[in-house]
Length: 421
Ligand code: PMP
Image (cartoon, rainbow, N blue to C red):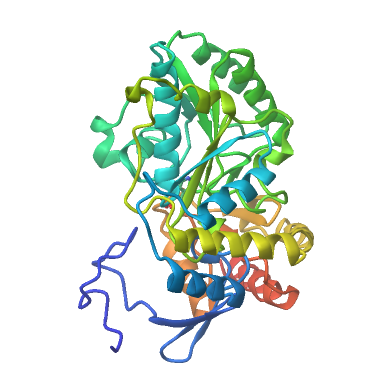
């Protein structure tokens, strides 16, 4: 089928103003860091297709693992049954999270967060304590379902739904110069009797515009939760699987979260899949002779064998293909480019955590709906590069297979755009 304009198509695209959307490239193939459209144009995927891809598009080892699994067992109800890929994946994920003992599967980042929130709330309910309040960062983004929206920033993403979102205790997002205030706000929020959990994006608040803060601050905040007996939930949906230089962003901390949400990179970017992991303490609160204490959550595709097979293959590539060295090389290249960026008058607040590099474009209308966003997006697309600015924030979040010359193409395009302003 030939590509049509978005207006003629029957498809409603996510996060898209359909009225003004032009013709979207029809992608027919992916290889390495590149995507190819029906007209033979190619695009360098510098945002890992919404932060999902780790090792490159259509990676042959992951593709082969999915194909083999599909011929064996495509799916089975995951209540009352189990299967080898799910068992093996849980075991291998926990090797990277040795302080956790259980893995709960779901389908995407939002459901990983929903499961985490419900786990935390029912943990307290099962223990007979009435704790319903969640603490979150004021700029947080945790997903698009109602629970995940509730613990996210009140703003452009949630305005239409705000009256239906549950009440959350928001504290300021750390910004490098407000550490004492943030600690004080967390302590004040914790002094209420009904706090169940603190949920956070570790080191990088992605959708808020790649806001970054130090591991030292995060470590202190998790420590305060521990001292106050409140659950710490790390939303590693974006930061997991190496993005910040270590396997998890919370690996930069000595204090560990009680619950971790994983998705996006978990299958190497191949399939919708997620996991919520937890400590033995959290899990044990659900063990009872009373059936009503089971975790009341699950989706039709929970533990899907194809997702598990993709995740296992992706983990193997991660562990055996020098992935951490590739991550380090990207981080070094970014650090060099950051120095160049700091010389450009149009760029402000240049920042980096591992493989994620971000800058603010100086403009009078900041924020997600900034007018400069489309100009920048179209400029980069015209140069065959996929960069999807969050308003006036340009960021690079590449797949780990990206080469230095390919990174160079992205860097030059950003420099040229900044100089054109
Ligand atoms: N948490 C974080 C930190 C995210 O960045 C995202 C997605 N951008 C989500 C949750 C939601 O994930 P999904 O889009 O897969 O539902």
